[in-house]
Image 1 (tube, rainbow, N blue to C red):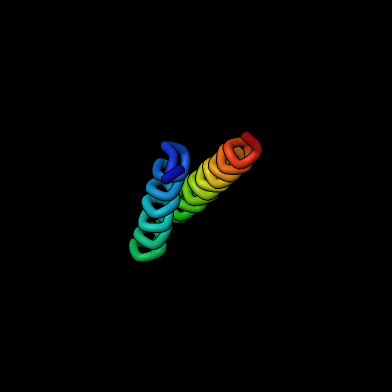
Image 2: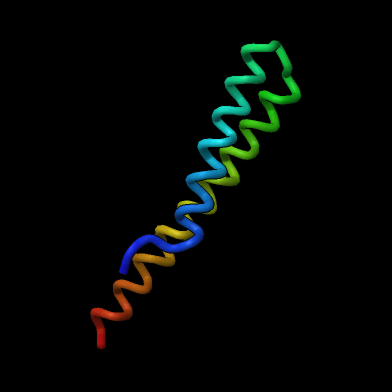
Length: 64
């Protein structure tokens, strides 16, 4: 099986959060830095969830 929706969306959110965090540092906005860090963490968690879900699907298909 290939990549699932959670993996893709999570990695996109993680990257966008990183950009937001760096932009906040560049302009000196603590609020944007924090929002970016939160978005990055949420994206990483979603991507990890997608990875686990993908692994479970692979393992369940191997058992057939």
